[in-house]
Length: 269
Image 1 (cartoon, one colour):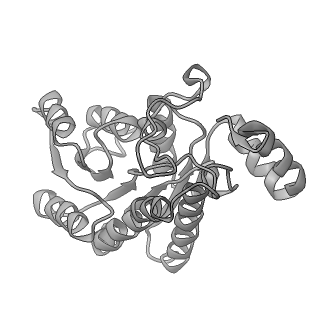
Image 2 (cartoon, rainbow, N blue to C red):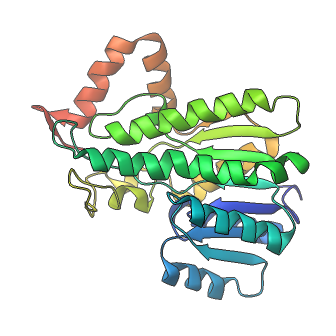
Image 3 (cartoon, rainbow, N blue to C red):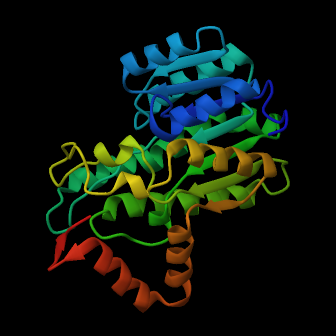
């Protein structure tokens, strides 16, 4: 990579693990100034210890809370003087059929994935416009195609994509790039921390991690897309295939997705 990220202020939500942590690991050697937030204070402390000699600002925050987002974004601007790139990465998933899921589970997923993106983006917007920067939403294939057992997650990612597309259009003459990234299945804690039908963490998921893209590889793709100013990025062949089939052969896509996730009306993945 070039020196594109050198001295850029990059704010990343959910940077203590998974794709967020991989983004930080990739950006530190490139000379970026990084701010990140997460709910786990111990993991953020370990991050600070790992990169004690680098420009790293960490804040304990739950992005579903506006006040926490205000604290994260405002303290980042105060620390570094502004924000060049915002990567809305933090998120949670769910794994339950609609007929079984409590309403509060779907609400919680929307609060984190959608409203967390809205809060942080809105708060950082003036600074990013001033710096002609970049806004990124880490979305999902579930933002293009509703997935059984992930109804709230799919809804939240559809909402993120639509909201960012509207924002991109509004900012089309501003010099700001707005993009959303849709990883396929990635070796990330988001699956293990997925909420079950009652809103409790499900623990280890049923997916085969050996067949998934690593968080580090996903991070490299995201940063490359940011540098190139891309509009959207769909990762993995299966992800691109799903988007294509759902657009042009929706009935066939219904059958294929159902076969992948369900057996006799119950979730298998």
